[in-house]
Image 1 (cartoon, rainbow, N blue to C red):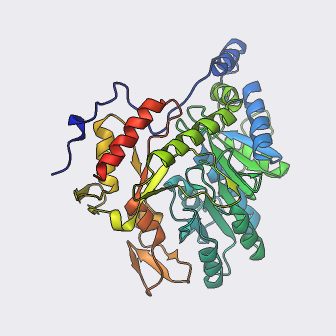
Image 2 (image 1 turned 60 degrees about the vertical axis):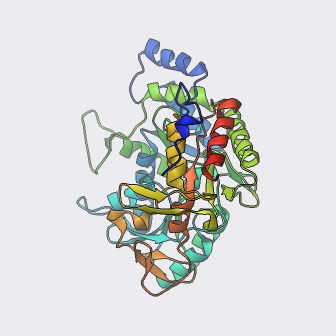
Length: 427
């Protein structure tokens, strides 16, 4: 029988979220400005200012404000595809039939834009010491498929790996890099901002991100020509004519001036939010000392934004747990626990946790796609290699990992109770 945590720990009256928007007041002033001036659509001062702020913070020359980060990643893929392979026929995507090396352990929004443009994702194994794309596996993938010219790399939970090494490998093989910095805004590697390493990059202002607009994202680039292309495509690719003239496929992707008002008001609080998230991470780290768990790894030379605090349970401290595509079961065992037990315990006190991202090679729609290991071995079915191979790192992290409540409005007392509940799981 599982332990009934609700009998020992009082549930929170108000839910403690994984991560939720934190408003400060300036946001409503900029929204009101859009309202009063009647610039409510996809042009206006708020949009202009967000693009300036995003480019400056990410240390790039240009930013294009869009409706969401997925839209930004889509236009990144379209720009990269046309740069590499030329403009496609109207019925085809810019990456039609081309393999693209992609992060394996990420949200599917990283991958879907590759598919929108007709590309074929080939997943790259996760690095055990960073939870990000493994540079060694990427090198092996280029040995296997030297014709590949595009890499899409995500930075997990605001804790970047060595994106600089990934960039060097891409340059060595003549490939472009798309950096999905949706979760890593404000994080850095050797003092250089995440979002500045990609030939094209994207950041997110989704409701749960380090700063928010409730929605929205920015495409980041060092090229004015590419920024202008993305702006044109994002407003249905309308030509410069008095009538509606269209010569290529476009999209309704532009950020509204109202949403931009929220983002504009948030940017001044980015460093404050990062400091709050770091304090949460450090309290978890201290409070969970002595348990058979480890927190998100911090790669040497990097400074995370600490967006989501997560833990991984030591292998020998895992009780039995099984999952199918929608449900999970576990067998309680003294001195051991598992993600399912911890998540149920958090839910019982009205706190939100989540499993670690399920690797893409395990997802039903991508199970038959290749995933390349650090020794060049290939896996294309759930937890199975075609030709033997090294440890399946992504699957292992998914099996043992938990994202913890990381809301920057969570009080110290609330976090202390969450820590107590996690400790109880191992009793």
